[in-house]
Length: 120
Image (cartoon, one colour):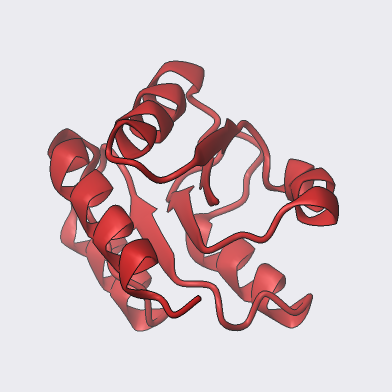
């Protein structure tokens, strides 16, 4: 399962639906703290995290926190409507790819290809 963490309900839902239409189960959540409920019942194969979250968190911070909680082998992609070089560099510096929201179709394809290429 792919989890899309985006506090923009429309953007997050559309991305999750785009991934699902390509044959990979995806769920959208508005806040990263909702992930614990998903992890109790599902295996997460990929995370897509919006860079700016309304509660003051940034995507790379959430990724670092999730890694510290044991989500170590889960691929992470960042996305944002802000395509500035600062956002791009911060995402890439955290070790995860950045794909702008306007390229949602590309992001969905990359995520699906990554999930389907995983063993098991």
